[in-house]
Image 1 (spheres, rainbow, N blue to C red):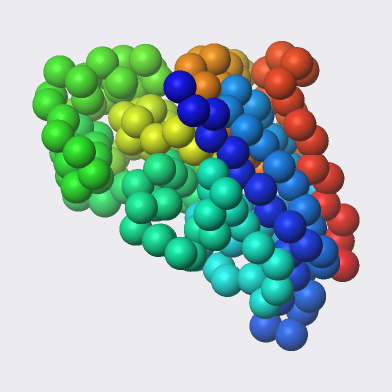
Image 2: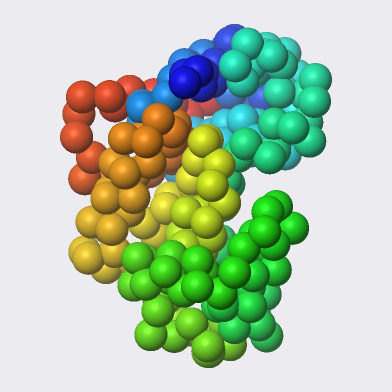
Length: 209
């Protein structure tokens, strides 16, 4: 089985006239977790959005398995599960309907698989409720189930434990551990460290510019 690898080299990113990322480099391979830290405004979200191709770096290069991620963006995106700071759910659909729609455009999926993932993230009890009736923490659990269901080797997570209680924080740590144990890569921007074992963990600290 081939080992996946993600690298970023000398990334420079601007947000308007502000130079957010200055020469940032990183590397992670299958079985590793890259923890990105820094103060508000240090560029954590900008870095994650650059990694998944939503923001283009003015200079520098990001490679997935040795190829520039923009060379075949469609193929790269099929390998990525991205969870932004806000949970990407449609308010008038139920949790089950949201995941059936979001994952169904990536691969074939059935209700049993969706229900299993919702149960794993503690969202099974409200699977049939419209998302607009759920709390922020409940929505986050539904969104995390979507990350699991994506079956992607690369997870890119922006504050994955936001809005979650202590049990939810521990849940995110378990999901990260399980994914990297299967050979996956997890990149996460966090304010508070996730409960993840140090072996196999890399750290990238960003400083405000």
